[in-house]
Figure 1 (cartoon, rainbow, N blue to C red):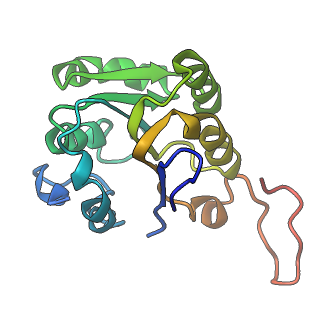
Figure 2: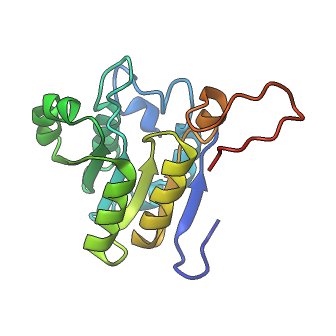
Figure 3: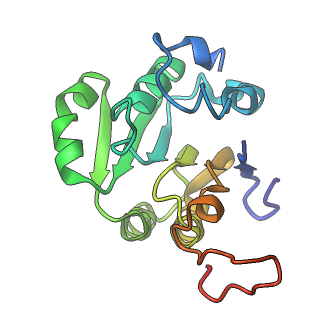
Length: 187
């Protein structure tokens, strides 16, 4: 959707010739989720941008290893300033030299706290693209969006990946014993 106030675009991803940008393809963005099909539709217009993007989540919990999205984004957006956000400081430190070689910076800390700090620090729209692939909890997704949406440039995109994760993994939901049960702890 387009936000009438800012002119920015909100892209919610639920399910580039980007998939071919990284060999071997080792990120779920272009394997199990097939996000490249949506990204290729919307992101080509900002490929030539020399502004900034932010991805929440370095991929430290992925079995294929952290930083694969950073590699993918750097190949797809050679001119963008790329920032990542990661909770796991030890993982971010482990991958620091690889990320530095890609000219990718990392904010380390809690997703929601960092989102608030970044929004306060920038005070204006600075990002052409924000991808939330972080905590995968309803509360974190909602609160990060609330803080970061105003930092998206007019014509930019805010992407929420894996929107179904909280419902399927019970990250911040209680398991449902049957369909008549009412949840009391969701965001």
